[in-house]
Amino acid sequence: MNLIFTNRFLLLLSFGLVLLSLGWVGHAPIYVALLYNLGLFIAAAIDYFAAEKISAFHFERIVDDRFSMGAPNHVTIRVVNRANRPITFVVKDEYPSKMDLMTPREARLTIPEHHSRTWSYDLYPTARGDYEFGNIAVRYRSRMDLIWRQASVPAADSVKVYPNIEEAKKNELYAHRHRELRLGQRRTRIRGQGGEFESLRDFVIGDEVRHIAWAASGKRGKLITRQYAVERSQNVLIMLDAGRLMTARIGNLSKLDHAINATLSISFVAASGGDNVGLLTFSRRVISFLPPRRGRDQLNRIMEALYNVEPQMIEPSYARAFNYLSSNWRRRSLVIVLTDLVDRDASAELLAHAAKIVPRHLLLIVTIGDTDLRLLVRKPPLTSADVYSQSVAEDMLRQREEALSQIHQLGGLALDVPAGNLAFALVNKYLDIKERGLL
Image (tube, rainbow, N blue to C red; front, side, top):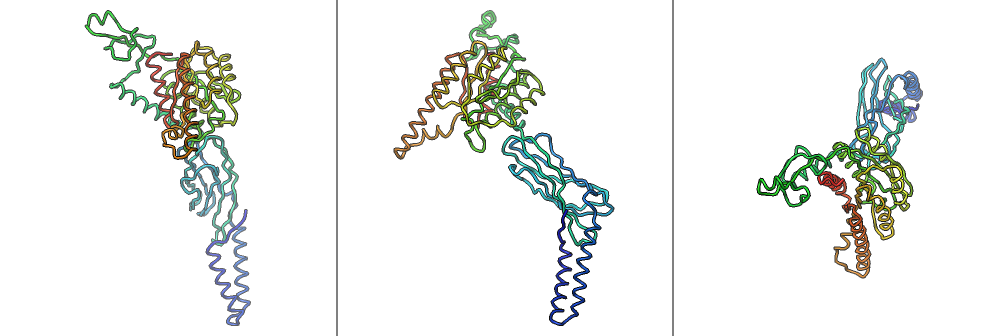
């Protein structure tokens, strides 16, 4: 506990100093000035000791259990005045320094006796992970308004910053609207080529020939196809690479951040559609594994597994990741691998182990496209260094395209998407797979 003099005290002290200066030059009795100033400091000391102790008040920080990355998060400070007089407080909170402050974290509150007031400010986390709040710094006026008593109220607390679930919900909505517009119709129920027959409709280009209802086509004089209800309770398992290449930053986010946002989006959409969702994160070793399950609790488990995953500056081991999957999960699933590829060695390892699981699972390899490389290839070279840089970029893109082509040849699916469009494109691909009954 310490003190700070108020403006009132400083004003009275300035008057005392004027008296003292007049006494020195003989215009006033100097002992009067000395007594005045001494009395002022004695009054301040009495005021300090007469003021309420910090225990006469209650301070509480109210925050949500989870903060969302890339969104405003509210922090509320509640102050209870248990004293028998109104008190003016100045309250300042010690927030995590790595979060962006959107509104002032300091407030002045005058609270009547035996009442409470709250005040809020907003924080904007730019990264996932664990963060720490410090204490609450407090000043309050004394009875005679000569001093501020100051204290630091213990209020250390931790908070977890998670990926933003609201973005996942938006991606689901945008993807459904996009497909409705693309197909030229509004669907009240998702249809596809699952195992349960639902209805007949006119054949359109792109439909499977094997689903043509020949008897119905003969009767109507035009091609008619069978339409099946999309199967539910299927398994979707996301394999998330947290290796070296995922440390690259695109805008304010790393490639891993973009991949985590996409993971959350596809998990939310799949769970909403009745599918079981699982997660396997890996770098040089398997970091975490959640077998596919359904329901909101599983989404919470996925959020918990994702909030503090950081990319590591080591090469990922596809061998360990796929071997772990084969040993611990055998039910047929849509296995989505979110990774990045830049050379033939990494591609060769991925393809070798991907080939082993294709007979059992439907494999979808998703690579995070590098927009800078594509822009570099399109840009006219001005120097010999530009020519060299372009040739390297073209070779990297070619190796990526070759790897994705080989995935198709193995019987898997591939998607190369710019980071900014990753979540939306992945949700669209999942919906397409469900509609076509590929799983």
